[in-house]
Structure formats: C-alpha cells, structure tokens
Length: 342
Image (cartoon, rainbow, N blue to C red; front, side, top):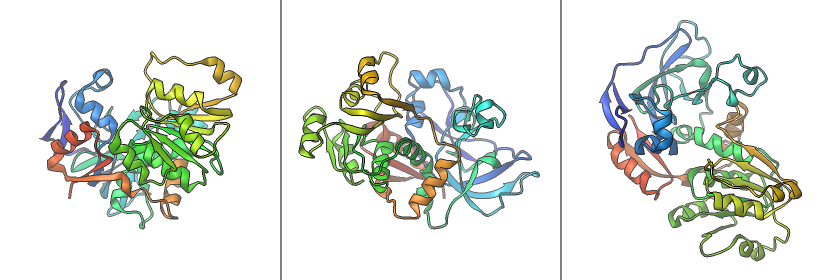
C-alpha cells in the first residue's frame, strides 16, 4: 500500500510502498478516506529538535484521519466491517493509576499513533478497536478527519465555564485557537479577544465569530479591552501560541480569580511572574490531547447542534500531492489541510 513515511532522519517526508499492516485479535483495519495535516506532522517534516528527540525512523506519520472499517480482529465485537469511523490518537494502557481513575488522556504509558507507531497517512491503518469512535452520520467526512484537533480545542475551551465570560485567546489564528474561539462563542462567552502575528490567520479567526482580533505589534490588549468596555480584565485565558511574550501579556490582563488553559508548548526559558499569579489568584491548567472520551461526546453534540468550524479547512489535496500541501503548511498561510486518499 501507499504511505507517507518519515524514512530518513532529515527534513522531508516520502510517499513509499509499504507492507499492509497486520490486524491483531483486538484490532481493526481501516481504509483511510480523509486525513488532515497537524502541526506535529510539520515538526516531523521539518525534523526540528522535538522531532529528533521523539521520532524513530522509519515511521508512517499522521494522526488525524477517518475511514471505513474493512476487517476486524477475532475478539472485536463492537465494531463492524463497513462502518464509517474515526480514531482517538492516543493509545492508553488501561492499567495505570490515571487510566483506572478515568484520566486516560494522561496515561503513564501513552503511545501516540503517527508518532510512536505507524499512523494514518496511508491507504490502510490497523488500530486497537477500543480507540475507534462511531460518529453521527450528520457529521461530514472532512469534519470527522479533524475531530482530533477539534478535541484539543474543545478540551482547551471547555475546561472552565464560559457563559457570560470575557475570553482572551493568544495564537487565535492557528487552527486550534480558531476552533476554540468558535466553541467559546457557541458556549455563550461575552467578549472573545484574540491575538496573532499572522495576517492570514487573523483573517481566518475573524471567520470563526470572534469579537476582535488584534495584531499585538500594532494594538495592545489594553486598547482592545477599552474599545469593548472591559474594565477589570479577562475571566478566561486560552494560551494557544506557545509564545512567552503572549503568555506574559495574558497573565498581565487576567482578572483576579481568572483561569488559564495552557495548550501552547512554552519553551523552557519562559519566565513567569509568580507574584501576579499568586496575588491575582489565577488557576492554570495544562491541556494535553482530549479527555478520553468525554471530549469526543462534547464535540459530537456541538457539531450536531449548530457549531460551525468549516472555515478552518482552507486547503484540500489528493494524497499524492502531499509535498505541495506540506509546503503550504510550512508557509503558515493556511488553516487545516485535508488529504484525500480516495
């Protein structure tokens, strides 16, 4: 079968002919229909420091995808051949303390599909049946293909109550930040202010219904607050940028008792003004993946009752044109990019 493989420890990825995956007794074989490129895939493509420390080549990449079940293992009884499904990308052990208390997303022994084992940028993929999700038929194939990153956005946004709250989102123009903004609006936030350095991505965020998107090099958060009569500060902060400067700016503009979801990976050199965190009584929550599987239920319900994140998909390519897709991804002038395997 064809697969997009990180076959060498250098920049780039390659379409190769690889053996069909084996199907264990508790696995299913999925014929991939749609997949989407993630920021993690771009890190692997660029072979940056994180990728060099994490990825063992060769490996088929990709962890955002959906498709049709074509084979099931001998012990599988809840997934049937012919069903349209998507897959949770983190395989948990099921036995560690966190798994057994309902916190599978922070399992001690997580294995990442498309990172630690072969992923979904391929014609077929074998995955544990326990990770397979049946999704409402009203949700399109393309939406199913991006439910993994939508799950990150959902986990980030819904970690704290939003109704009537003022929300600040840093890195709002990235796909996850933009989807988080749409969720905040859907969940009843009052003002949603976002910052991003990219003009393309600020325009994308505006399509998701935010109150105001600013270029932090030209307009301050304080100025945006004044325009919208926000005197005290933000109730909720969603940090999606991974920028130390943006994070510091967020802390400075939080209201006393505010709550911050940290999705962006801040570098180790990031300095924090602990006095402000303490005296403002702020709450910080680290966000990793999706809460398994409550976040998936939240996504499905929102998508079937009016949440529209379709503007976040900006490009579509045949899988064979993956190189052009990755070059656009590297430029940053895009939202989510769909690869079609049919």
